[in-house]
Length: 220
Image (cartoon, rainbow, N blue to C red; front, side, top):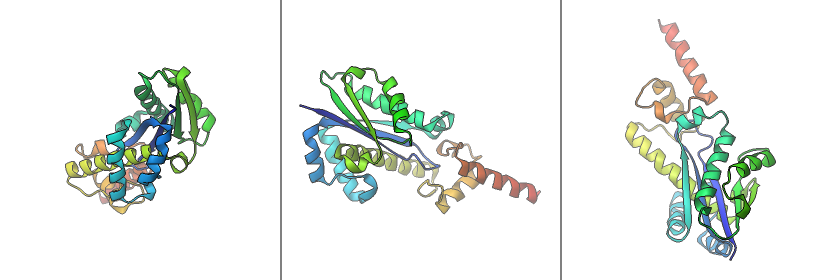
């Protein structure tokens, strides 16, 4: 039996809410099952189909999810390295009791695949059983990584829904180009209730804060 572990992220680019990484572990032959379920890059699936596949995955396979809050992202000096840490945590969690070698495929977030792979490799607790492959478009090319993409996206969507309900404001998708997101940031960056939702290290947020500050100075 050849074990395979796929890992992918969701919510890396938005200015609101968490970044989520997920890992799915199973036998390599289960790639065919994932294909029959319609597993592919989560961005290519409807919300209904994505949720349906997610339920199939969590009912059949081992998985683990890691979430990074906006505060954790802001306090990290390097987003790629934070993602390397979270990736290694998933690998360590899902392989801690394994007696077999495991092939790990990760959708690489960095343009420098070799350097990022080295960062992850150094954080793995049991490197002797891990064969690590970091690739671009892995969520498109490997069903097991597609499965991880689906879990990460579903967790991110659940978290965003929870945050909208708590804020009692529709702040949109959380992406920088979304007008609702921009309006929310400019109106709430100094509101203690909403501060935990915002990634203040993002240039979009800094610009909106500067614009708001300038308009207030003109007003007075």
